[in-house]
Amino acid sequence: MKRNIFFKTVLVIAVISSLSGCKKFLDQVPDDRQTIDDVFKKRPESEKYLAGVYDYIRSNSEWNGDSSPWEGLSDEIDVTYNDYPTFAMNTGNWDKNRDNFNFWVHYYQGIRRASYFMQRLPENPEIEAGLMSQYIAEARVLRAYFYSGILAQYGPFIILPETVISPDADISTFSLPRSSYDECVNYIVAELDKAMADLPPGRGSVTDFGRMKRGMALAIKSRTLLYAASPMFNGNTVYADFKNPDGKVLISQSFDVNKWKRAAEAAKELIDNPDYSLYREVDAVTGALKVYESLKGIFIKAWNSEVILSRYTTDKLGSYDQNGTPYILGGWSSWGPTQTAVDAYFMANGLPKDDPNSQYTEIGFTNTATAQYAAGTSNMYVGREPRFYNAITFNLSKWINNSSNNIGGTGSAPITIQMYNGGNSGQYNGRNWSRTGYCVRKHVNPNSRMGSNSIVADRAEVLFRLGEIYLNYAEALNEYSPGHPDIKKYINMIRERAGIPQYGAGAGFVPEPADQGTWRIAIHRERRVELAFECHRYFDVRRWKIAEQTDGGPFYGMDINATTTAAFTKRTVFETRVFLPRNYLWNILPGELNKNKNLVPNPGW
Image (tube, rainbow, N blue to C red; front, top):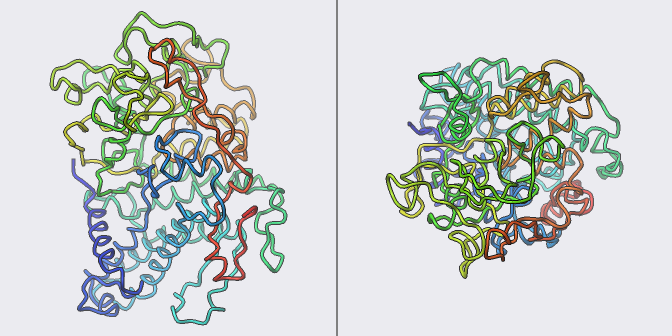
């Protein structure tokens, strides 16, 4: 498989920039012997500058450290190590001065760089008109994407002027107030719509898969409008006092169903784009769907038909492999799904585990071994859906079915993972073991071998995919037009690819939700399972206004102190988390607030 060459170029530019940190921001040029004016006289240098704008797209693949908090601060996983910031933040050590994961400045740097590129590029005599329009459109989409990142994390933002403000301008020039949330959304959407006319259609060639296309702009638009239509920002009276110094209310106090309509229409426009389809692998002889290969291939097969926007990373996504691989195989076992994340998966019969007809039980242990688990496995893991076995490593589960990745080498049988204390991947005197008794295997490449430090590089980090857009569409349509047949159609397409019964009537189906409310529950459940460990859950529970119920209180896993499977299989609190109402929106650092007296803090901070 070929790699995304364009993003490899971006990363080279990033390294060059990091070595030139003493320069002022706008003086960062590809060659010290050139000036910033020279950059916009030569086509190759202008293209490198645009590559530098792309580099502000953030990676979500590293859940440890200070790179990406969205999984570690959600109810999906526990980051094992107590010395990482997510532990402190989850347990209540989070005040207005904490700067971990504060991306406000990062995004505004990307916005400034994009705007400067758009402002200066027309000076370049070496770029023909059509290509110039395309490059400006790419920068416009990138700028909108960075604004959408601020909107998702912090809420209403400051819309900067089109012309970049000079660094030596008077302080009053920088003292701009926040626009309302709806104004921010409308600005992002207008920018995306404006750019699409000059963006290439289709997916492009291997050398420019990472460049902005119309489908990518539509994906950003779909997610932005879905968030804007949700209860958090659509008539949320809790924020009645969230105002600018001049009294301007920043969150709309009245519900508008047409926001859901806009979200549905944006998602459907992308769905109707023939360039994208759900990724499926089929048997070459029978034509039957290969479920497990399809589910794994979404993230392993670089730039497959489902991928809309991806990002190449210098670590080859090794963080997924290292943290998701059990200790016995050279991994760290350090990203532990919570018990509620495990419980969210459906049964093989398509029903949620709490349905009286689901056949779920936590009593006893199976005497039967399968390709997914060994004999003696707890019945709580028996008869689950394929997405469960694709995503979760549990006690006595078998490792990914690739003999070259097993301890015995080529030709060996899949190793059985023991998560109890003293087991081959359970608690021991070191620190690389899961505190929940589970590991995330969803993103692990079965061809990577941690013991020999061989990490496969032929994949990119998926940031937007079509499966999300199907779920965006179904959710928005259910809120705007309950009973519309497309709700069931697109949810069933997700379920069919997942290898579980679809909603409908008759043999081989599960009962269809009866009304808007039960469909809402079904859609939320489907979203949680299909998009698990893809950095959506953190934002979903906030936009649905349910984070007080999901993100605070006791968090459960298995009994990791137990030394046998029988004793291990017991729900046990591994952590008690603190969630406060102010945590719905991120803290803006005091230093930023002090610079701009018109910038009001988020509620509670």
